Length: 541
Image 1 (cartoon, rainbow, N blue to C red):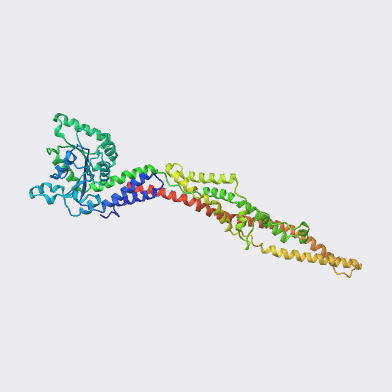
Image 2 (spheres, one colour):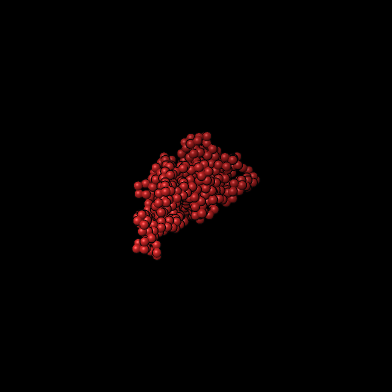
């Protein structure tokens, strides 16, 4: 039977998607139950649509096998003390065509199969024709002391399209059948029948009160729509009515789909309850930014940025300052090198040796990382089921052991933009050296004129009444000093801008690590939650 594109096919697909998404997040037993329903439903719908599997179940002594024999009109199942101890069910098939694969799926051995219509004479064939398309199963006793017996009962109870539970006047209130089978089947009550056998052993005046008591117990179990039929398999009382009810449900060809639909809705409801129904949360940029900041602090980004800014100031001031002042003040060491921060051969990225030189994250910084990760996860899971809170927290922290190495690599891969100074710095550097040369030339010229006593000679080259030599000396020094002081302002701005760009690039690298190690694993869990939520919604539609 093809199910894709049909309502029941869509529900099976929805439950299948929900079970797969819930695997490892919700209770394994519940997820296994959902996966089993998907497998059973898909398997059953691939098989014969013309047959209805009817299971006859009951306790020892309830007359279950007698009821089976009465329905088939043959002594196919041993009864009473002659009942075999085998854990196999017995099957009687009306209409063999197309039933072989179904019987194989039910795992009914060939030696326990009987084709009913082939064994009837013409008169009795007409009597049994109403059961055409029925696969009737006599299940082992559910209360047998043999473990294999109730394992087989549990297996076939889950596979049958229609279940007929046979109870007797002595044990119809037995908790074993109510607690283990009837009460948990409230979601499948539309594919259940209950028959009270041995009604002939009950005085006529008490029969209705006993039926009313069975009805009361079923209502207490939540099975208010399950019919109760009185029968006597030994005398044939009620057997025609039971046969007619089975035939009616088989003829409508709804039991298979009703059972599958009930199974799907029941387990989907349990999944929905375990999963919760809060709206799927979206990762907020503000929370990611808080993570980024905590990771950047732990990685030493502020240390690198501060050192880079001071390095750019030192290098810029050294290039644009008055060379003599630089010489008198001594050569200041590069702040990056004082921190043992090596930009590598290309002068653009931190080398591996450099990263090892950065101070390790402090205890406060590590605590902040843990706190931000926890707050990030908790913010996304407020009001969600505990299982999903745990799953998201696990995902958020699952890769934090890689954080140090991944941050190191991110910093090492970042172009800090510190390889070269701006072009104007080079121009100022050349200008300062030209001014220095002018001052030196002016100094030498002034000294020579003074030695010759011609410093005030009107014939000496002058500018505005002042000897050119003095103008070169004083102008070279004053302009060089003033230019150096003015350039300090521009160098400071340049250094701040370079540091800001480097900070942005470094934090972009940190952000990529944040997404890889925390955000993406968490988003996988949120997507799984949404898939379960969507799947159970489709399964229950």
